[in-house]
Image 1: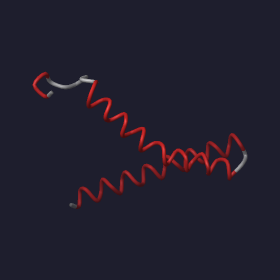
Image 2 (image 1 turned 135 degrees about the horizontal axis):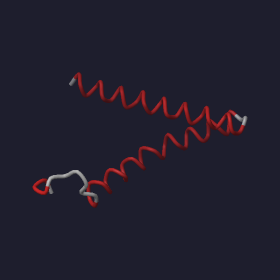
Image 3 (image 1 turned 90 degrees about the vertical axis):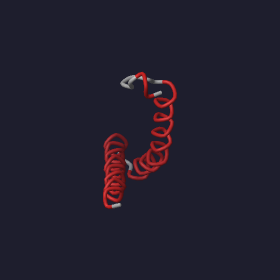
Amino acid sequence: MVHVKRHIAKAISYRILGTLQTITIGYILTGSLVISSTIGVVELCIKPIMYFLHERMWYKWIKFGLNKGND
């Protein structure tokens, strides 16, 4: 269970880091903390959905790197 907690903590910290990066870039480009924060929140909500869909597409249609016996 320690390993699972570590992976969860790592995933959360990575997502926070990615969102802070998006907010920072948004602020640099727009000069608005409100707009950059909004972009960050939208990104925080959309990226897990995109990741899930990406995983499903790879699982269903992309067989790259799989052995023939692992279908």
